Length: 172
Image 1 (cartoon, rainbow, N blue to C red):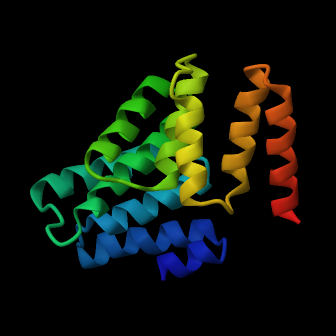
Image 2: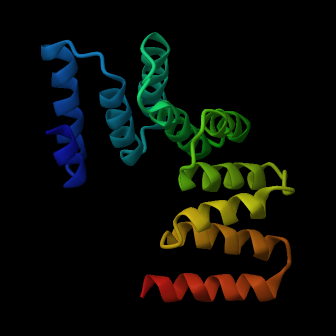
């Protein structure tokens, strides 16, 4: 039910539902913590989100996903996204690098990594990481917009305008 409420945009109801799963059923499942953490992110409560992702990471250490180890990268990726929102860019970079070291190929990881690197002026890999995100999900206009912003700040206005045009065309 928590997932359904989340998809419907009923965020407080989703949190309530996840809380009941923990309280009544006593479930300690990393995926439930990850999903509740995502809801907290949508509520812009990034400290609570980080707490849930931390719990998921601890649960993973106790019981790693042997069948699909890439699942174990998810809490690092989402924790990194919350740390970006809190402007904790160095910590976000650490989380994204852990996710990549564990085998993540998630475009959100590459986009988040590039965004955090750019925010800290670590520009060597910014465009390459945005390109990796876009190559994995060419339909995500946020990735295109982030890359366009980087080109603008790097004063490559021709590529900036082309990137912006591509992003606008994809949105329509």
